[in-house]
Image 1 (cartoon, rainbow, N blue to C red):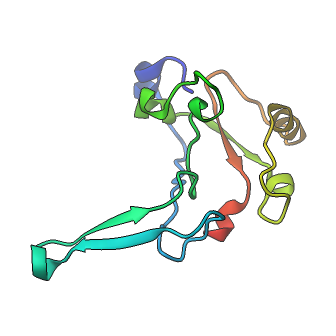
Image 2: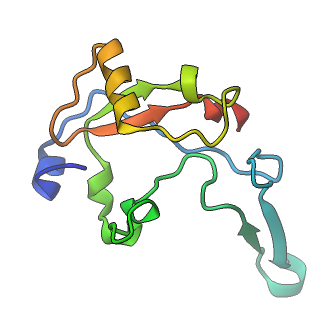
Length: 139
């Protein structure tokens, strides 16, 4: 996460910005099942269109808060959006953790360190890590 909070964000200048979002449709792949869209209001009957969407929380590009792995970890709602804006190092682990590899294999800190060293990447205090697994090719 960013150290320095708002002050750092206000003074930050970024040379590149990456959009990590994925388009979600009824055909979007996920190992736990496809998203379900259900219309519950129509323009003709209700004057507007509304729908519900049901999907796994671990769907497409997402963020796991510490609470997901640590008993008393910080929950996602305890972060501010500013915490997710800043410098990042992209680590490509697709050769080991890609969709054609063993499923449900945890990405360990030791593995990330090894990939950083192999790619000659420097992780500085306050940097975020974007883990490239190759799974986005399925979406």
